[in-house]
Image (tube, rainbow, N blue to C red; front, side, top):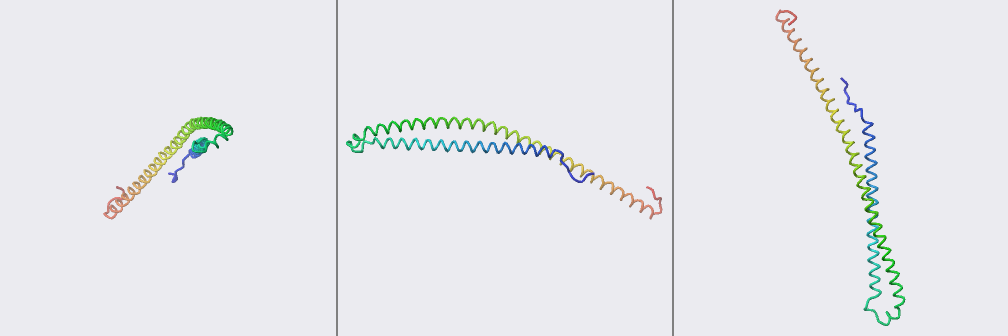
Length: 172
């Protein structure tokens, strides 16, 4: 019997493993995109908070009333432009949230594909394990049968030798 196990579906396993690796890379890319979008969202929230604090500081009552009155037209224009800026930031925040949700939906689909690809690789691995176990069992049975045959022949030879010494026939 052949002494080495040979798995005939190595190429199939290799292709399935490549598919699994490709899906794993796609999932990693999606996670990276989502992370970048979440960082952008945090930055937008921080910018809105900073701008709001600047706006509050511009109209603080602790400042000199004469100074506030003198700069009132300028302050009002500045507040209006900052208000427009904050509204634009809120629009960017909403767009970023929508992008995150879209990416997460795509990510779920890619994760499902990755799970299926991993499952296909495991199926091939299990098949190889079963085939290897069957091969090893056949080898073991073959070796046991050979050992039994050798033992039987040796016992026969011993019996013949005893019979010859005892003066009997050479055949049992």
